Image (tube, rainbow, N blue to C red; front, side, top):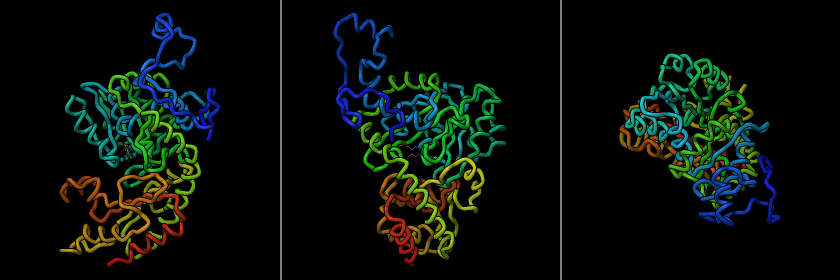
Length: 397
Ligand code: PLP
């Protein structure tokens, strides 16, 4: 609720007010000079809104305090999770650098590293998520960054982050960046395990209401300082109205995430016992390959459950796994079909026809995305309503 809220409020408003301005005025040239030379007594003084805004800064302080409650971290907010990821990664690599990337993860992050940055001479190796021997084997003299997610999207693979951080520190010069969007600071705190930088798509749990796009990076002030400078160049800033919505969302983050953890666990158990389900992916289930490390490292398993609908692989016409699974997704009533997660509304999607629509069936399989896969992101509705919706959807032929 109150993490990182330290600023005196000039207007006596309870929430941090929205300061809507593109620029800031100075009393005289002496004040300009003081600001530019860093001798101005007001350290929070801003010059131009691409470099800073009080509403956004208050949000950044909140997010830094959530990820590092005992202090020592700084945060930067962005206009989207991808703006946070692209600006951060660009700040840490240059032509000839090598990046190690987890295979299971947000597909645009993979595209950023494997295509966009590759075109500028940044090399990469893709490893299975959390496969530390593969990470170690992939390290080159030019390796500068390891980019992972924990839990991953969509298979919810949880990485032993303390071991990953130790490995990178052993090598030196290699920074670790973990996209912890699915975990939230309520369920895990990667910085406390030695990870250098945590990124969030704040669009998801932090904002929590499917009404705003935002992103953030958190880490040691010196490292975050490099990213701040580049944010001022690339311009992917968060506007103060959106910052206000994210800050408002954060006030109920713990309530929402605790509810979503409990509901997702209940849904995963129901799915695991259902005859129409081939496989369930949820780190809270003992059958999940990373349940052990998830139970050790996380205080909750998150609100996303992925599962495979049992289908006849040789089915033709309207009996193909793609068609059968689409019918199941279409039969959800409370859960809305949409490509996001982490908000108050339950959302469902079939990755094969949503996030991976442009790939052929073979290429999708190579990317690990089966036609019968469904991702359910639970909201904060009554658990009984969500479970009833799942059971109803699984009744379609
Ligand atoms: N990281 C993860 C794990 C995501 O799921 C997403 C979006 O779906 C992103 C990053 C990108 O965030 P945004 O949509 O806010 O740019």
